[in-house]
Length: 503
Image (tube, rainbow, N blue to C red; front, side):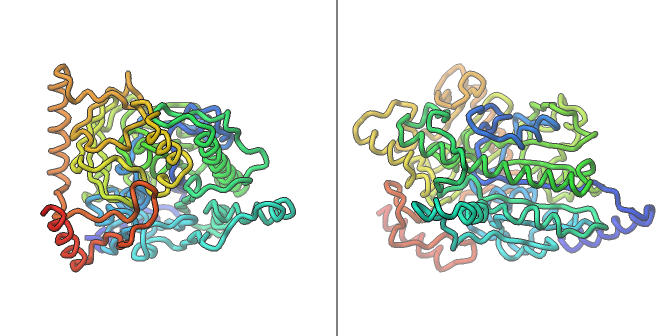
């Protein structure tokens, strides 16, 4: 199947280019933040975060207010985007699973049609699909640590260089400079910001704890505010690199023929955000900039899924969407922001440091969540469990000082079904699933979810996976074998483990 599409697309591209000596198709720059909430930019409603370049990008283009990811987990989200399929269809649906070599990606189709394709920054898709790009400049920050104390004061230049490397963005402009000048190009620019762990001193003017806007489900303490302020600092550092790319496009005189899309791969790394199916986990900033083709300062409120990105990129290149792709091109929304291409968007939750399984369906107003492993608490990722913000919440929990909105991650068992009116309850704090007035809506959304699961082959796994970390302190457990799809022996061991637990 994959080989057929490559041959077909290559033939189509050669036929098109035979009619024109110069390939004038638009360049495409795709920028992906790592663990950034949809509403933590100046242009998306948080004036406490300094994002001048992204704000200018939005001012000159279109901002989508109802764009959703298929999962709130790093590598599965990226695998879903690049294949235009849902995580459970990729065989890379759990954290750190590599994308199999037999998966069709939109990048290889662009490449076969004449685009120069490159990736720079965070690489989280496995080695088997690196050949889909002409060049991959993978960020490696394993040995980088920011200097502290007197060393930091004496070496600000060194500190900035190391900090830039830790951002995962320091090769974005260099790879743009290195591109061949006789081809249209596609760039997959992936940041490590604002992923944890956080460093102090990365900005000359850091955000102040008083600038922080905390959601009601996070305890408001000085420690939590300092943690959020460091998260804001990394967003501003990311913004600087976005500005560098935009400046380089202008310097090369290609900005007017370049389609730029900025998103995040999942929500912020704080309690009740990343890995969850709440909007704080799966909703993404989505900014499109394309001078002369997209109205400056425009906005679209239509529903959009991250599986819709690949078909849009292919349409920009004059290519058709393969039938194996689940997405629909969102380009019609650029021409008519009032148009609808979806009634529902769907998302899933799978293993990420901790075992879990959940599914969600959402329209513009209502969200339905089905928790299949509701006996497990809604634990955030291990790096969040280790964070100052979460340690504060555990302290207050032990002191019986948490308010109801802040107890969500500790409830066990949790509700099997959740239904929220996101218009009147944007933080999704009031579960309407047991409200008799919502019975018809609950049934309708549940049926839509079941239909989607059947159509996309989403079946229950035969076994559960062990947690890799402690849910209480985020430290590694003695048995640290991450789940992998190709380990039959591990499957048998885990089945035996859970049978023993059940007995």
